[in-house]
Image 1 (cartoon, rainbow, N blue to C red):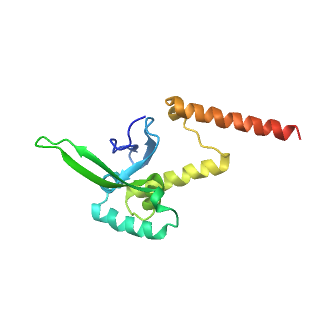
Image 2: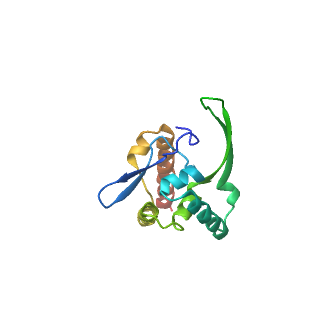
Length: 159
């Protein structure tokens, strides 16, 4: 698993002639983005991100402390190391934020989130084979869930 602090491109954007698709990197387990990364990702000015984040954070009715974190790290510069402190936002906030933005990337991201949720609600699950196969941890989680499902089915049949 990659450290999500060090990878600003956790969600890969693929642009073709008239479509934009998204794919979470196989090595990423949890998605967090800073304000600067959000600006780059959604291809909007930094000021737009700040404004949209304020609106988003005012609108959502959840425990924000679970979805916002402040991290500190040292960035090595040629002259001298620089101490950095930044606020990062979880995928939950990122998804809400996309609906407050009006850029082609944000619109495509909205569609991706909705289509993923549609697949989940229709099937009761959402699988990404490549991501599961590349992570022993994810594979074990899937096997555990399948075992729980099999046990539930067995219990139901014995009634």
